Image (tube, rainbow, N blue to C red; front, side, top):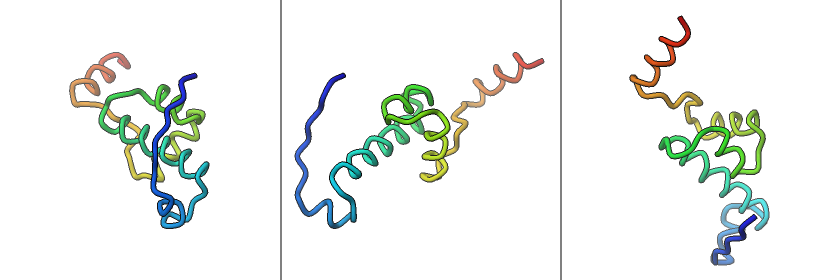
Length: 84
C-alpha cells in the first residue's frame, strides 16, 4: 500500500464538521465517485480505492446523485446485443 500525504488548513475540519480521519475517508469516496462518473475507473476499482465493498460504493453513488450506470450509447448497444 502506498501512503500519500497532503497538507490542509486546520480550519477545514471544523468548517466541514468532520474529524480528520472522517474527512480523509469522505475525500477518498468523493474522489472515486468523481473518477467513476468521468469514466476513468470501474465500479470495482472505485470501491477498492475508496475502501468500500461494491454495495457501499453504490450507496455512495446514490448519496452523490451519480448514476450507477455509466454507459455510452455505443457501450449500451453492445451490452444489449450480448443479452440477445
